[in-house]
Length: 235
Image (cartoon, rainbow, N blue to C red; front, side, top):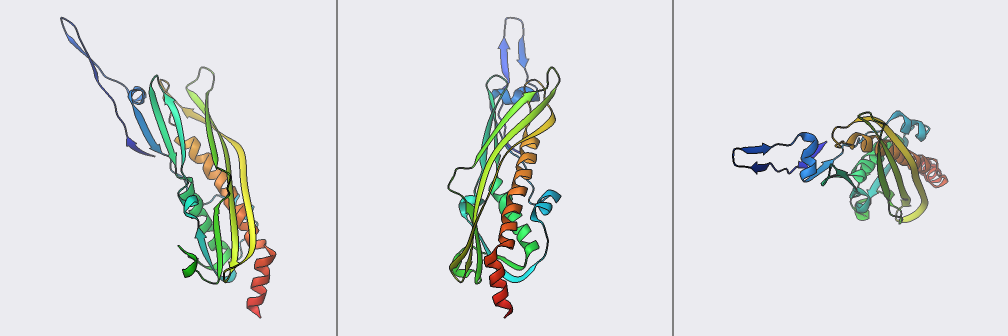
C-alpha cells in the first residue's frame, strides 16, 4: 500500500487562561482531509488460475501479444467516507495486473512470446487483447460485524475481455471472457470509523482477474484455428 497524500490540521482553541492544542489520532487524520491509496495487486497467478487453464503445454510457435492501451490503463476508483468529513480514495490499477497475468499465462502456453506495441512489428501470429465495449464495473460495500471492531468487505466486479488471433494480418479467431461475481473478504480491523480496505479490494480483484485471464487463455489454446495453424506449420 502506498499512501500518496495525507493532509491534516491541528486546531487550536484559545481562552483567557490557556491554549489547548487539539491533536488528532490516526483514525481521525482522514476525517480532516483526503487520503489517496493504491492497493497492491499481484502480477502473478494463483493455483486456481492454473487449474482453470486446464493444462500447461507449450506449443512450438512464436506469438506476438498486443495489449490495448485502454486495458493497460484501466484503473478503478473507489471512494469511501471516513469519519465525519474525511474521504479515502482507492485507485486500483487493475489493467496493469491483467496485462502482467496475460503475459505470464501466455508464457506457459507458447514456446516464444513477444510483447509488441504495434502490428507492424509483430510476428506472423498475433494475439490482441482489450476490453469489451461494456464499461468495467467495481463496487465495494463495507459492513461492520455487530459491535466488534471487525469489518467485512464485499466487492462486486464485472470485467470483460476480447481477444483476437491474427495470422499475417488476417483474423482467424475471436474469443471473449467475462467475470461477474461478488466476493467477500472478512476480518478487517477498524477503529474510530477508519478502516483500510486495501487488502479486501486487492484479494477480490486478484481472484477475479486470475479467473478471467485463465479462461481467456484456455480458449486461445484450445481454439480450432490455432490447432489448424500449428498443423500447417508442421507440414
